[in-house]
Image (cartoon, rainbow, N blue to C red; front, top):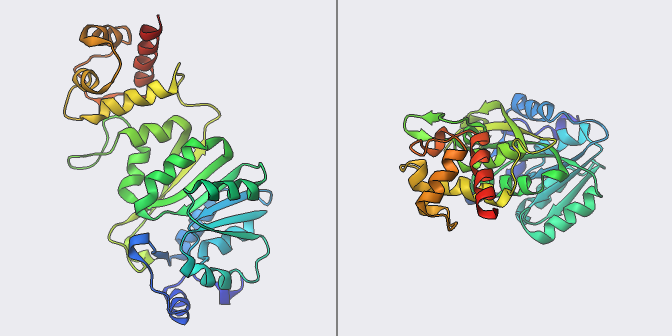
Length: 299
């Protein structure tokens, strides 16, 4: 890499934003990574080959984009902030295998542009996600998981641990991190935390620490269910009132015309104690309940 293009230091980033009189927007989560080891860990963790298509969400100044372009066949970079596009183009002016899409990744019209750039190929997603859109982007990736080989995502540390959480786990103290997000991601993806990144490794520094999560697409969902919509409705109802027992949470929020006696029979057939709390159930146990619910309603 041309050393004049290396933006993995505080001084280099500061010079670039000063040259363009650019003011990072805190509300948009514009915190630029300035740790070379962390940048390399993200790229290495993505396992990019010379044949791979990479989709980068929020390239910012292009620091990570440069490193991705050295490994991939092509990088599609989606940037929502029009103000930063001139800086991004300056960084990438000598790079021939990067396409920049201006717009919101979550906008359906932008999604069509991305599909055109990928030309039917599966992509590796890499992103330093602004904290305010982490969950919507994660859910979009999950819903379109067929198009994605894997994803390597920087996100708020607390959210990262929710993504990989197992039944009964806690991030700290009374904060319960296993929930709807954990199950939604793990149903389609196999997640692991690659590294933690302190707030001091960003310019400007955010208010929280971060972590990098790798998500590998499963060949098939983690558990077999008869009706995915019913499965996720069940999960959301179970976690909708965490302080209640599983039976009471489902009785009040499931929305299916079972009645308490019917719900009791469903749980008995699934061999689940209704006095348990939702955060103690595994994906398989939720699947067992969902399947018994499906059979009961459709019998």
